[in-house]
Image (cartoon, rainbow, N blue to C red; front, side, top):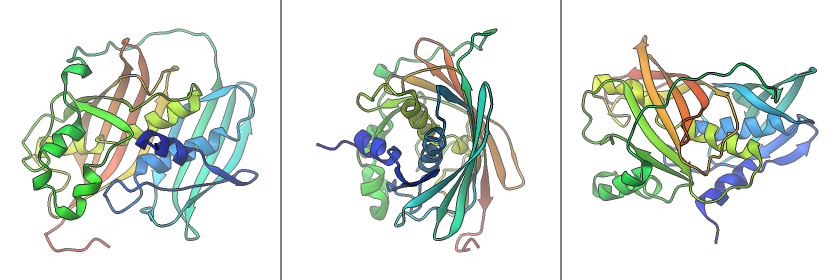
Length: 292
């Protein structure tokens, strides 16, 4: 039986069309457009497929240009900008209907030993003691608009367990901080690229909405236009995405109809495996206005 994780891994198994050109499909998460984490992860996979030796991604940055069309495949064009002694640099452009919807730059590095330090992982409840976000959503399914209900309560490839859950229908003013555990639902192959891609996919989930917390505004508030503008991930060391990872997020600033958020992702052993930053559009419009 096909599971949501198998479906996600299938999305990451891009179809090669030509040298440096790949094609990927889409999965509907209920937003009416392609999930940003999906196109980011697929572009990372496309970039890595053009790196011929044992170098792994350490720095990846993407810019979201246009909303993705769920009904159309996405074509990824990879530019091989540089292959140096230690580093390789790639640029990826994602195309739909003849237009760029996303671009990504990625750097890959050979494994080396060096000076090592990190921040400590915060002390939070274990994931086994927390309900999953999916369980929490299904408990309030009667409050979810009918047209979104099936998509929002469908089985997921990622198990997300918030440390301090937020009710999207009853927002409260909170400090701009949140923590959650996540892992892939099932066992993944050992290839590090797939674990990096799944982490990149999951890292776009919930990050920008951290900037809404001090305003007591839900991501589903009438008149709110919310969208990722850019997203960066730094990968510090190897990890497994099918084992629990702690995502610690905060939003130090918002203004000018934009919000900024950042995150640290820890393995359960306490190792800091990745850092994340994102800026996004947070535009409040009078109810009934149609965005351009």
